[in-house]
Length: 207
Image 1 (cartoon, helix red, strand yellow):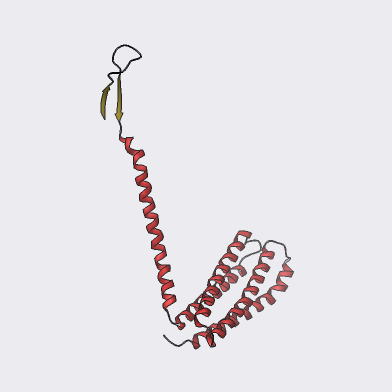
Image 2: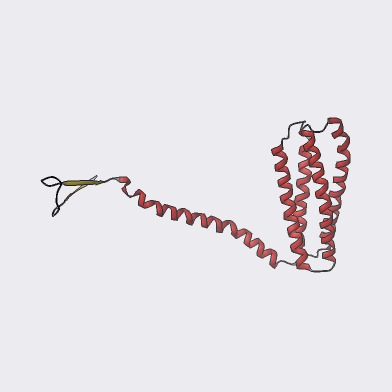
């Protein structure tokens, strides 16, 4: 620890004699001055992470823009297949749960996840429709879009049926009576979308 003595001269003292002030520099003296530097470094790190995360997304967008019609079509097929896979996994899980085992928070999460994949698939479909213009690809994309709407409606209906059951707003006998019909409608809608996706893959010529 260093100490420095400072003498004050040519001043009118309050009391006679010489007044001496002392101050000391401790290890933490410069900490306050270092805070802006630390904040700057932290900001640089955050910017770097943001750029790093955006790089794959930017590369994907560039690839999508520069890809062939077949590549864009395949991205649509893949997005809808991901959605249908989640639909099946969701209802397999719900079917295995006992009454009251699934709460409101669980159903909110299920709806959010299903909707996220639906939006993603429709976004890719709309982008592809704009890029291909008219023709057979556009007609097939329109059929997929309409079939996806029906699948989404039947999916939501079945999710709501399970939610009423697990929240005890529906009797067991009522649930068991309605379930087969809801499930048949969903299976039909899912199979229709799957058939159209398979047809789309056959229409796509290898790039």
